[in-house]
Image (cartoon, rainbow, N blue to C red):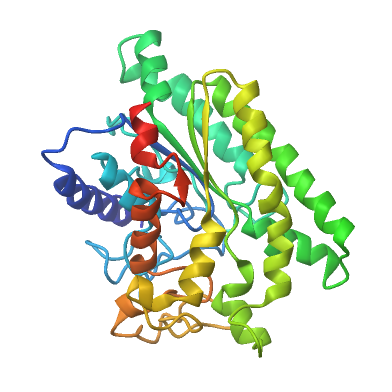
Length: 355
């Protein structure tokens, strides 16, 4: 089983490397942390039910199934390609004895959150992802780069990408409150998330990271899982759920400014994930999409793709592949806007890479 996953990983990397051939890299590496939005297969070999290592996932990815919970490439893949480097492989699928690239790793794990209690059993929590990065810095990079100064230079110029938080609300907050939360509960929970996040990001800074791209939480109430369940009458989304995550999003910009002031030499970029996805859902035609309320693949009661039924044929017209995750088309638009746009990520990733 493990051999087949390594084969798929190798095929995928060859394809993405081919796309980048001839480009001068804008950054030496991309390091990715977070949840299923950017997971590229870390959960495949874990004892967890949060997996996408079966068809129809990967139907449009070269080599097929990889563990990405979408039909093709995800946001991290597109950003890596734009940087001119290979897409960072899932850390848990790499054999450090034979792998030699220094272009980054992906530590993201489906269902992970900022809090250690968030996520299904067996996944990589954010704290564990930070621990894996510590192993990368302490054990992997010293065998690939010539000296501590080169490691420091490598890390200071690399891009660090974080997409996490929605599962803290969907799994942990709602699990505790179950519709009984008040405004004060929203505020306290958002603060607890950001306090924990601060510790995690500072730990990564102390290991050498300097360029941070931090995504706020997407409009949770616009996910097909919520829309199909609650069937809002006067909105395209479940507004109460969007209000819930907006409390966190409203606090994040000031926190990023605080962290940048405290952590000398750092640059924190706020990626407005919420605004982008809300705009996409409200005006899909502007993004070349048609369907935003229903997933492309027939789903199980849990919202993941049904392995026994084929996905929609026109996947480029759907915003979401399953009940929770966007399609490759959506990820491409999101990544390209954050990379070169003027409003989603400020400075954008292309500008951040030149700092």
